[in-house]
Length: 120
Image (cartoon, rainbow, N blue to C red):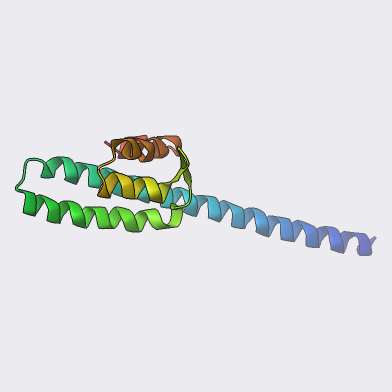
């Protein structure tokens, strides 16, 4: 009887470790997505506010916030956002090229992952 119990206990221990690891991975992914959406919202706010500033000071503020958003995007950059684009491609197009379609895709991404209130 002991021979049968040991392999079962070992299997349960391995499965429990995987489940715990998967939970941490899911939490980390959620935190990365939330951070990206927070930074995207901050960029949108800075960009909108810069529309009333002088071009040089607005660019400096928006550029700094965009840098934070690009850094936050890195861990989730390969996630698809539709139209054959990744999150990285759409983020670059939205921020560097003022592509409103791309911006719509990244805002929709934030909505799809549960952080729609963080964007503008």
